[in-house]
Structure formats: structure tokens, C-alpha cells
Length: 194
Image 1 (tube, rainbow, N blue to C red):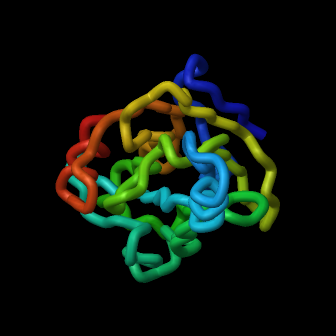
Image 2 (spheres, rainbow, N blue to C red):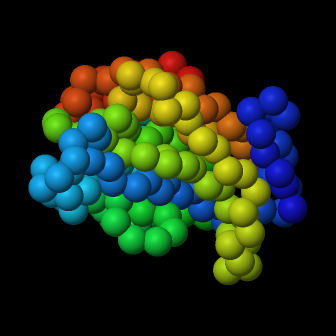
């Protein structure tokens, strides 16, 4: 089993064949009480978990938004879009099967973002990212990452898996930044900077 924190630096994923990263959040009413607060909590806010497959620093595939299996072989799978944050457990998940990742993919950056217009981190509470060792069908949690609630940013680079010869390493990043909402190039530039 691996245990990850930002301070630990990259962890070897020797023996880890499947990895899962999930994001969860709770809807909030912001500062609104009464009927408006109840409506805002009911509709929630839409955060997105996106995995960006990189080749030598250039984004080449995107799992998330409207692409659930961008490589086409099941090696990088997105669970689908949760638009409210309602429900227990992880609201969105990306699964990675390392043995199927094509050899020219050198890293995968996992980003959570308030990507769609009208969504924001400020309209969500208790945002957390969980990393699981999913080898052999298990879901053993190895990291729990909580971004600052003070940020005015709308994206967070959660973690980065990096190919290291025939194996992979995973590091917790937990760096926030701003992207232009609805702009995939802005999102990809943010991921490439990590």
C-alpha cells in the first residue's frame, strides 16, 4: 500500500495496476438563506474532474467533460458528469489501468475545475479528492486531499502520474489556479504547467 501527501513527493506505484481518483463536494446556498438558499442547495453546483493525458508536456487526450474513454481501450475511464454534488461518496471518478496506457503517454494530470459557466468552488463546500489503489478490484484509499476553502481560483491540479520506465510514480500536487470557464485550451494550459 502507498500513502501519499504533497510533502512526501512522488510515490512509486510498484505493484499498483489500477488507480482511481475521485472528487466529492457538497452543494451550498452561499450566503443565501430562506427559499433562495434551499433552491441553490437543491440545484447544487457543477464541478468537473478531468484527467489530461500528456506526451512530453503536451496534452493529447482528455477524460472528462464529454469524453468518458478518450483512448478507446478502457485505460483511462471517466465515471460521467455529476452536475450537482448530490449523493454520497465520490461525485466523479477517473479510473486508470496502467498496463493499457499507450507508451507515448508520459504523464497524466488530474484536475478538478469549476469548468462550466456559472459554477464555482465558492458554491461548493467540503471539496475533497481521494486517491485509491484499485488493484485487484479493491478500493483502498491512499490519499485524501482537501484544497483550501479560501481560494478564489476555479481549478485545482490534484495529482500527477508520471511514467518512470516501465512503472509509474504518483505525486500529490494540490495547486489551485484560474482557467477561463468553458475554454478547453485554458484548462489544458493549466494542466501542462504542472
